[in-house]
Image (cartoon, rainbow, N blue to C red; front, side, top):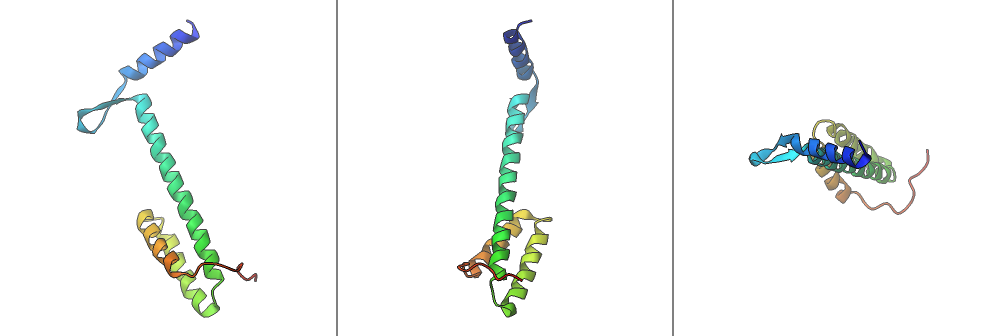
Length: 111
């Protein structure tokens, strides 16, 4: 069998293996794989963005005076822990915290 006929056979197999979807629609296995892949890419991007913002928040908190820094870091640790349970809510809490923190202009002090 030539490469072209293999590709045609694979395409027809994918079209025949329809997966039921909401609303009575069906999707081929290839379409289902694409949607799962797109969802996992979106999830990965969400978590990468959340990690970047948490890192930024910790850097900004470390630049604060000690009397303010410690409670802010405790709140950040609570948000970090919350990511395990409800990442969307933790992201919203982080957004509120970032809005309250002053923008970082100087590098944080080294210890």
